[in-house]
Length: 392
Image (cartoon, rainbow, N blue to C red; front, top):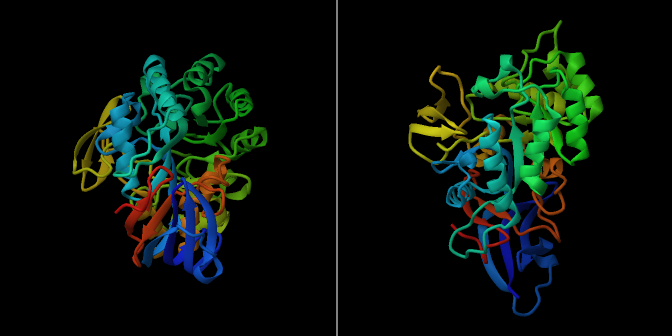
């Protein structure tokens, strides 16, 4: 039995801020949280002095394609390990591997490999923290050709019960999120099928009108993918899918807060409409994340990174090199209180997945996934439920 007490200058649960805090962990689980003088430590508890730092839950990224020079669709355990280790350095301790539109055979091969990795997670490693794979996000192929972004047009498909069935069989219990364009023929029936399989249905890469988006929401769609990007533009007489996302409280909204994908005033509009409780920071990160400029893979095609910005051969944005610690800092720079900014990268995504008692929260019973931040909110150390102690 390994019990450790981590003493910190302050802690965000993230619902509550606690000064002079202590978190007690035992065998990868949190067993006690509170102010240092209010928590009694059992005999034999090791103490870790983190009083120079702020503690927060480990970040949860529900939309990420790769990092560290590798893409999640490579279907290789070594590639997934490299991705998991890379993003952990920036505070992400859990992630949902996100596919991109490809041939059905290529997609299924990737899904099968990802499912095996999710069902048989890596053994504990006291030397290197690594993010935990929570499941799979299907981004494509049931998307609008008009709003495809960089998704290969030859593999975009109308909503298909048969094809979704193949994907679900390949992914098994790892299937978590399905992105689709609700205006496509057959989309509403696919919402029903995905919801019956336990998936979160997300609106994305869509040219939907307001009414078409509302129809999908009323059938069970409850999330929106990288809001503002690859969506029908908002207009005062044609509010479209963005109007539906902004006005329906049951819909959570992803945002890529990298300073490239979305301008600051749009971020502020989203926060004013949705409130921090319904906004989720995502990276949409590619293999280039944590790497120098150059050429990298996204799904089955190549993207070029210059000055940290990913684009395809035609110059279109193609994912990002964002990490969630940077996204949190950007929101704070816009005036968002740290607790709310951290919530967008922790509790909110965990709750969207139905994992809010295990992930994205510092509370008894939750996994001991912790990020240690300095005063500028840069990552100083990381701890996951599989590591014995915080690691810098």
